[in-house]
Image 1: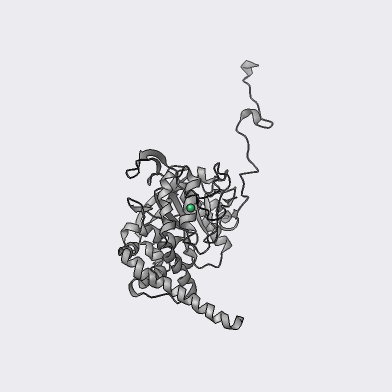
Image 2: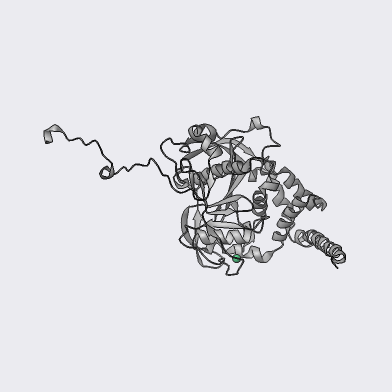
Amino acid sequence: MASCSEPLRKKQKTERDEDIFTTFHDVYLSKHPFFTDALLKFKQEITALAAYEIGSCNAADPDNGYSFTKAVCTLRSTKHTFAFANFFVDAFNMLKNFIVKKEIPSDIQMKLTLELLIRYLMNDEIQEALSQTKECSDETELTVLLAFHLFSQLSTSPYFIIDNRKANQPKVCPCRKRHGRIIYGDTSIGNVDVWHGYLDLIMEGSDVIVDTLDGESEIFKDVESAVEVKQKHFEMTDNSAGSSLVQVAAETIVYSFYYKQIHPDHKNSLIPCIGVSNIGLIFYFYDSVNDVLLGSTHFPLASSNPFELNLTTVIALWFVLNHKYLCNGFSFIEMKEVPKANFVDAAKGKLDIYKRELKRGQVGTRRGNTTSLDPLLIVNPKFTLAPELE
Ligand SMILES: [Zn+2]
């Protein structure tokens, strides 16, 4: 009978839930005593986020709306950095109290989010495939591998969508195991009159966007396997138009304004974006209400050779992918001490579009008053010929 079996099922479920937390302490932490150090790094300068100021910028060009690949956005360091944990205070304390005092959060959502991290850390099989990132033949393969083996594992909702304009669209994960169908679709965002374009990957339920970082590909021999691998290096100093950092900044800003547009009631307006390469990740954040742009250092995927996942990177990703529940924005920081990005000034002429007219899907390319620069294609030109030639 339903009335009898129901409480029994519930009881079994609760016991199973508590088991995973206990096993984590008894088994995982004894095998990984450095986990606490990995967590404490979020209070240290080694993982600090820098605040940037925007210099030259084509976000509000009166004649054109630029795609992310043509975005100009000079980032200047303000020389002010912030501890990563400042923006995830409750989440940091929850994790610390769980590790140190075995405290399990009473809030259901927080408990569920913590469980995601714990289950992932104890799942060696799913982590192992990440050692193949260097063998991925292109950025789509890398995106698929990271989406299945990292991002969807650490998100409360595993659904993601990949840009359907990619030339190569693998049907299965590069690890050759079937995890479910890969959805390719329209990932366009923005508005053709301002910054706009296609995102590489959108983690749907988490509301997090992911961009693959372009860089110089170098072929070199892997020391362990003696196999030749292609690895991309991108410059953390490259501010030029269309560079990886500029694209990530432009996408972060547009997505943050879009997020505010669709979630006007959300208290936190500091929205993240993840940049990925086959050796690691970077995180950018933009707050469209306070006009602050933050960026991280490079977080490596591996912490040792042979491959072992870097725990600090996993925790950072867990914070970011669950920003809807875990990010507190600037609520623990004196706002007057935080340098402004000055995007609001840079985009003054078109700020209303960023605030109210961004959309996702079918953004397309710029229409309307586009005129050809080819003299032969100019309609009814005023043609001048020197009288001496007549
Ligand atoms: Zn896989």
